Image (cartoon, rainbow, N blue to C red):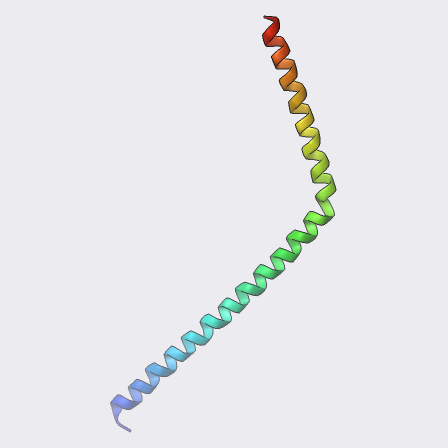
Length: 76
């Protein structure tokens, strides 16, 4: 084998290693995304009722404040 052939083989091997590591990284990102999704769904299912109740309370208080502000504005 000539020196050029050996150098070419080294370059080919390096490219193959880079492709393999990119593929592994993509799989790892996919697994992380799946895990985060499962955790987010679990948290939302567990705390969904509490979150809904809090949002409803805030909404109700904002409506009351708006009504009071409109009443005060029309009284002046």
